[in-house]
Length: 207
Length: 255
Image 1 (tube, each protein chain N blue to C red):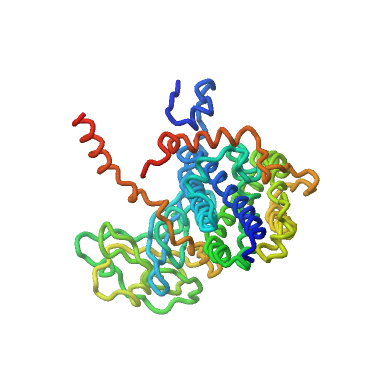
Image 2 (image 1 turned 135 degrees about the horizontal axis):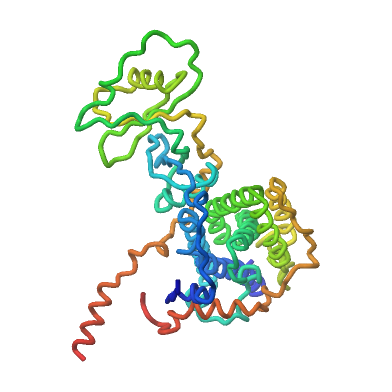
């Protein structure tokens, strides 16, 4: 494919003169995804922000920081491999998903794992962290989540994540969110082309 | 610390720092849109933008000391008037080279600004305090990539090693002393390039020791210097021409 670009960087690379090799490594096409949760203020609940592709949780953390906490400051971030997120079915309309979940049948033997519980209250919004339960498996964790967090307010969907699978920012990491306060050089907003364009048109129509 | 002499020493230090930031920021921005994966494209571009913002903060300090407006300083000088080290002006190369440069340079930058938080020049100490946070992330990013690609497989280790071997002599040029060095130290403006170099050696070795990469011998005699005195590779003027192309169409234009 012949490539011609107005971008001086691309021109400098003289790609036109090189044979474009077919890219055919399907194993490298797609990295796994990680879910990213952000805490906007000290004491507020962590909330799902989106996903990033990355090869490891460490790399996911790096990418997440720039993608989801760039425009505003935040106080903490969690990343977790998407495959580690256990998801209930979605309820329809205003139905509470907890209404479909029974009561714990007797005590379990040895609840060892911590699970973090996330609620979705409204379609189009993000999952919010509501707390932790101790349980042996996700089935039991769900029953315990109902006992602890079902207030009757409709919850449309629930996520459960084993806490050990969450890579969390440490208090020492917090400094990465304290940045230059003067960031107008990053805002496209300060560049108002409309007025200038109109002025230019007027000037040239007159002439 | 208000004598004319020490002010020129202070200005020299500030120009070294700001020019490094501007040139590397511009270089790294060349990856925007063509980075190796979308998430990394965003992260690397964002850090490039941080660096340009940091250079602006330092050019503002210079402006307060009577130097021309930051735009004038950034866009209207020729290569021989720039004080950046040669490391930052080299072309982006393949991605491993840009990553290795980012690793070698940003460690020095973080340490430099950490040191400058104690500067006797109060405005500089205050700006440095603010920059340290951003730079902590830049270094975290660099270290993660070095660890990842420095251990992943033969291909990645080989590429990173080659880039490291090429970049290290230029990186040693970061610490080129200016004639004002003694004065910068005695006035308490900065603890000096030698201290910075020693700390830098410790920090970068810490990261490379966790990988299969071999840090080339750090021998100051092999440093590629001259940048701090305005001696540059041919790449810098080309970069400046491109960077200032729009500005020079109409230098007085309001944006």
